[in-house]
Length: 113
Ligand code: 5GP
Ligand code: ZN
Image 1 (cartoon, helix red, strand yellow):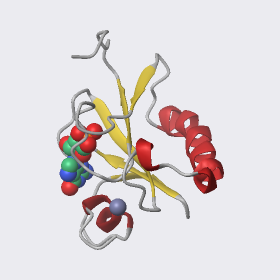
Image 2: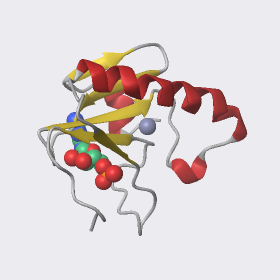
Image 3: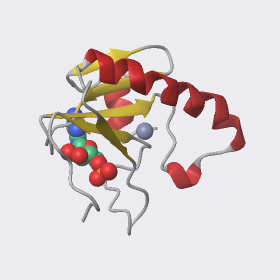
Image 4: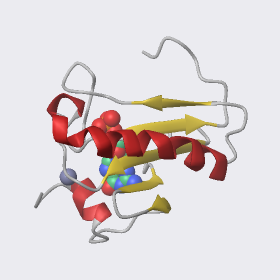
């Protein structure tokens, strides 16, 4: 999608610090990290939010989930981590391209604010 910042990152039209990439997903460091490790995992396909996922996306999102463990391993999150999706206005989603925050390397509090 034209003026979507994460589509631009996926297409390398704007720079990011990439952790993992293949033909379907890309993972890069968050610009404003909230933990010592804070990366974003996104499908390269533009999906606006978790609430816009369609049946056709089942395989893609299943695929993304199977890569979380590998990315966490690469980032040495052997002590655990948190995967977060903010959806919509009340979920405080700011970038309208589906993304999962992967946070770790500190003890995370619960519940989130
Ligand atoms: P949300 O609030 O939508 O769940 O998360 C959006 C995240 O994207 C935020 O944590 C924010 O710091 C990050 N972010 C926004 N713009 C950019 C950018 O241009 N590059 C990177 N790497 N992260 C960004
Ligand atoms: Zn997009």
